[in-house]
Image: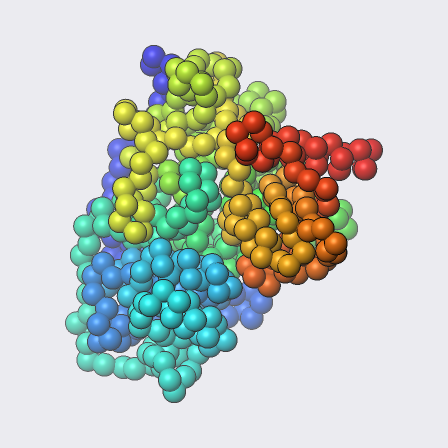
Length: 532
């Protein structure tokens, strides 16, 4: 610690080439080794099979006009073909954004923000993509995964054999070129697409692994999550087998863990809750002893859930860590500090290698010392490059520290603790919820006069949407009707599952602003009273 600034250990970075180039070398080295498995179908791909398919698709993409640094946007729920398309684009020096299927509003926002040259999706989602493109007057090339007479498709592209396969080589990228576009969780602004370089993605991966990379890992989401990029990256660099688990139930995950002898898990919040709350009959039905390391993150995890996870995975070291889309993984657990492991269940560990952290007072912005709560600021050599729109990130102080928007502190030993978000925006499952957007949509309902929404804590999903509504005089509406209206105009995930309560009027401050904080407190107090 130097002048109240925490510093992580110094470790030399050794990134020598781009992700596509690393995959090329790994596939040459581990050709017949399994790369990925879909446990629902038992379909497996070896490194050589994925390489062959990716090269053929890359050749066809290039013929369609794909150039180095072009952007490809993938709208598709998790399946075994996505990584093939991702690697094809990376072999050509492209930039990849891979997202689940979205409704029209979110699809339009994403396409407008990224401006991709290519979009690949599934057949049933083409209509949504076309409507989104039309609304913003933008026309990228469209491809789909299934066979099609109308659009280029992976099914045919990967079966076109050409002489070019014999001479194809991956494009040599600058390691600081953009490799992936991820969307922020709203920690510093509204959700935005941000670009990550090959260096930022790989720097923490090419170091000696902290766990047995000959054993497989489960992958729980598409490549729209920074933690899953690290898992995939380790597979590409070390030849580690990955098990696609995003569509599995908690019990199916346990079955896969037993069947494939899974060693490592990184679980996001709702998956963590599933594992923590596993019925004892399921825990006893399957052997989970192969799991030796479990990390969770993406949101604050209460100590009770860490304890439950440790009961579920009795042979594993279980901890939570802290990171963000903008910064990458900012904390780790080093060595074997048994005292901290047993007694600091609410800590996210210590600062990661080559990073710096400081806590600043919310009012004075002065730097605070140990056990003093303030906003967390972090300086990282692995931070995002810029927004996908090209805009430079502005929430950085004069010394290069990023304002995380998170409230927290560190103790005398350097263990870091995250308390809560400073802003109102929050993440629900895999999308970002902006309460003011829901309010504006709901005000279009013929019976609604005013509305105010906010995120409240929920033990299962961490954050859910809740709020108050004022109806117009002589108008009526039910909670179900309003909830359906929101879902129809945004998406089903925007439903206020935390509840809607009707009020005669909303309170305002002296300057005419809705008293959001007071209303949220009122809502929570009423909910707690109801359940007490």
